[in-house]
Image 1 (cartoon, rainbow, N blue to C red):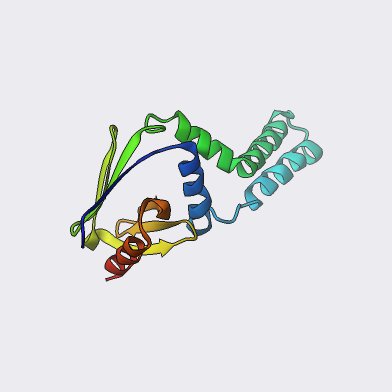
Image 2 (cartoon, rainbow, N blue to C red):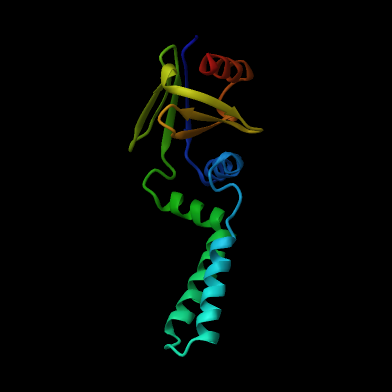
Length: 158
C-alpha cells in the first residue's frame, strides 16, 4: 500500500457529516419514545390517582418533556458539545500506510492497525471503521481518492 497523508480541519461541517452518516449504523439510530411515554404516564398517574404531594408527578412530567427535547434536538446538542470541545477547529492529519490508519492532532493521536479493524461500513459520504474493541471511527471519503477508499475497504476486510 502506498503511504497516504492528508490534513484537514475538524470543522462543524465535517462533524455534521460524521453525525449524519454514522447515525443509521449506531446504537441510537431509532429513538426510544417508550421511556418518556412511561415517565409521562407515571407522572400523570401520580397527579391523578394519589393524594401524595404533587412534586413527584410534576418532576416525572418535566423529565419526560426533557427527554423528548433530548430526542428531538440530539443532532444539535451533539454538534454543540463537539464544537465546545478543545479539538473543534483543529488541524487533523490522517495517515494511511501498510500498518494501518492513524490520525494526529494537537490534542489526540489515534492509531488503528489493520489487524485491529473488525469491519468497515461504507456509507454514501464516508467510512465507519469498526475496531475489534467495538469503537467506531468515521472518516469522510472526501479525504481520499476513490482508489484509496477501495483499497482501505479491501485491506480492512482481509
